[in-house]
Image (cartoon, rainbow, N blue to C red; front, side, top):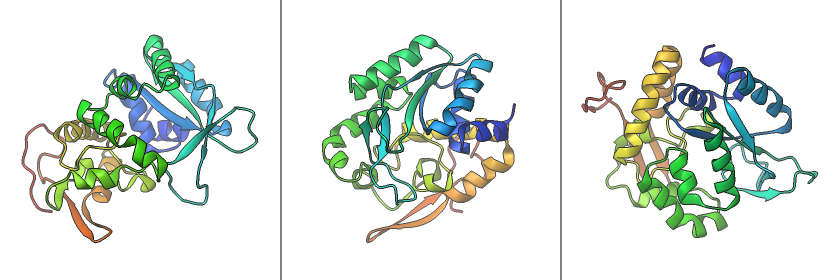
Length: 237
């Protein structure tokens, strides 16, 4: 089953890519949010394809439902009448899926982040900024930009196009030139190119270019020959 089928089941190309990473044993666990009407086909897919899954015992209600894309939500009881997402933890290993669920319930951000395959530097960054950012918009791009020197960064770490379903990492990088995040993104892009070259090309097109954040203009640039390899040769677009 190809990338398009995964997108139809899980709702987006970025989620589909994560599931493909789990299926190939590249990523240990993924945590994804689904609404009531989406959960059935997700669980059916997992059962049919030998993937273990665990569901959080609560739902997450989006704090500002009028926004097209929001990072902020709050936990609510499953019988709360408001519409909310349920976190599902998916893995090839049922123990890892169960552990991820327990770690989330215990609010153990460090161990959960590492189990989800995030770089240690980015996990620590998230923990350091959680108290402040969770009270605001739960968006960590502001402190990440403060940690980022200069105005040009590899497109692999661009997380500003998530609302367009174009992103290669599922965490906030501690800076936009984070080497560990870039290596994860390059690995993910290689798999995406293997699954669907046209979608991989679309991702690259979306992720490169200039973005203005407040008074700061930054550029995500890319290499012409080594987007899918391990060799380092980033050049201007």
